[in-house]
Length: 68
Image (cartoon, rainbow, N blue to C red; front, side):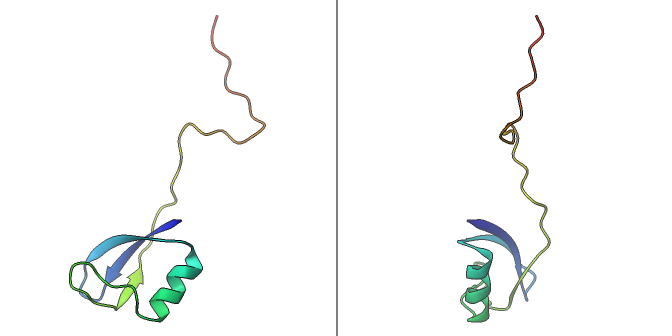
């Protein structure tokens, strides 16, 4: 699943979840993505920062040793 920040032609900002980037592109091309505020189908993706997960270590890395 991927979450996109979207904005309609009316300037309403909102977020929506899609199964994949391709799923968003297919739905947007068919005008199936609409603004929940005004119903406009003229929707575009907005820049987003990537999600950063805390507390998850890449496999193969050790946790820091605790002080005695």
